[in-house]
Length: 299
Image: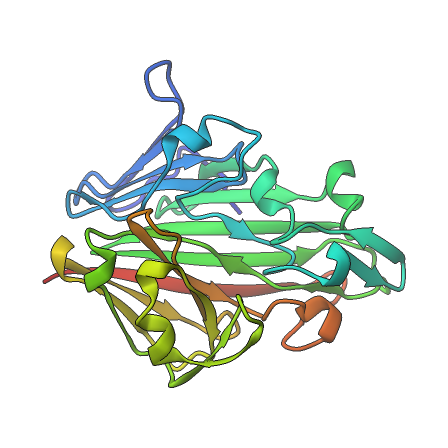
């Protein structure tokens, strides 16, 4: 749990709250200088990740300044669904509940604090009257973000805080990082399987065909087969997603002309809470942990 702001680590990192000139939280590793910027009140959003002196994430600050618009950039959190459900409705034993695309976590305020061991920063979202209208479960979703050498490790923990005997909590979890690229036309993605599922046509597709159209805009899902490497020759770097089961599906999304590419770990496909495919369940009183890691290398 994110607690103990006074905890001391071997290399203590600093978490600075917003100031008048800097409206976001800043988390810095004093040894490497790597840093995160965060906006917990806007969906627990990581808005920036500086690694080796370079910003890894794309972030549309102008759009972010208008709360009425959806965020384009950073690392939005997708919970309790990835994608959408038929009719944007969650059907459960308890009834029918409206649930928008990608869920509500990216639209709710989160709390923030250093991790107890001083190794990173923690974000936490709990159920509230606002979430219960969409998702009738008592829950806590915690994210632990740890800066490592040339890497960012992310651990998620979903707790079902309902009474013992209550229905299991169903969910999917995904992250939606916008990775900045210098030239989308020259980007290569390595490590994907030959076949994928095209979200635009909602039909099976050939991965190579999708990768040839990054500049035109793509949105497709692949089954996990290990690390997936995004190579940006013009930017002089590669970013690799290291997915870990059960959050080992990979979605690739581009939105030209934005100079970015999303490389997203998902635990389940679109409609998982309706179809049951890869739906995750947490019994009352228990929790489930998921995670992934991103690494950066210079070319």
